[in-house]
Length: 324
Ligand code: AHR
Image (spheres, rainbow, N blue to C red):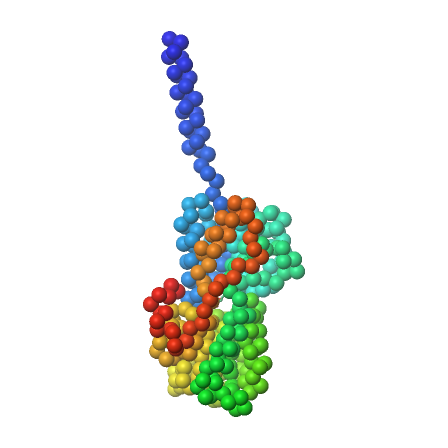
C-alpha cells in the first residue's frame, strides 16, 4: 500500500513537470518593422527579403507595418511597437529628418533601433544602433564615373562641347535622393562642360518619372543624358522618350540606380545604358543583426552592402541570375 502511494505521488510530480514544460515555451524575439511603402520594384523585393528571412527563423516574430509613404504613419507604427514592448525595431526612414522624438521614446523604452536601407539625420547618433544598406553617395559617384567613361569611349565628350544632363531625383528629403545627388555632383564638378540643365523629383516612381521626363522633353529639345536616382523612374522616363519620338539609350543616354530586372531588360533591349547596383536583399543581414543583439553581441555602427555596376557589356549575362 505504501509503495502505491509513492508511485501515485511520482506520477503527479511527473505530470506537473510535463505541464510546466508545455507552458514554458521558449520566448520569441518580437521585431517591429516600419517599412515606407511599395513605390518601386526595389522596395517590394526589400520587403519580401526581410519577411522571408524572419519567417524562416521560428524564434523570431516580425510585426510588419507599411507606412504608405507617410511619415506620420511611421511615427505611429514606432509608437505602437513601443507599446507592444517589442525586442527590437527595424526602421527604414522615408525622409532623413523629423524622427528624433520618436526614436528618443524608443531609446527611453530601451528598445534598440536598427536602420535598414535609409538612415536618419539626428543630433544623437546613439538613437539608432546601426544602419545596414548601401552607400548612396558612392552610387552617385559611380553613376558619374561610368558616364564620363562612356561619353569618352563613344567619342561624345571631347571635354569642350556642352553635355546637357537632366536628373530625376528620388523622394525629396530622403537619404538616397540627397546622397545620390551629392555623389553625382562631385563627378560633375570635374567636367566643366557638363551642365545639369534640369533636375526635379519623380518620387522614385515610374509614373512620376514619366510625367517629369515628359515635361523636360517639352521644355528642352537638347538633352543628351538622363541620370535617374532609381531605375523605376528611368523606366517611366523611357516611355516618355519613346512617346516623344526619340530613341532611349541612343538619342538620350540613360543611367539609373538599383539594377532591378526591368532595367536589365531595358539594357538588353538597348534602351537603357547603365544601372548602378543597390541591393534590396537585406533580410538575411537584418535577421542576423537581431540574432546578434539577442545573443548580447555588439553590432558595428555601419553594415555596408557590396554592389556592382551593370551596363550593355554585362547585363545580358547577369539577367538570368538576378533575384530582383
Ligand atoms: O532607398 C532605396 C531606394 O528607394 C531605391 O533606390 C529605390 O528604388 C527605392 O524606392
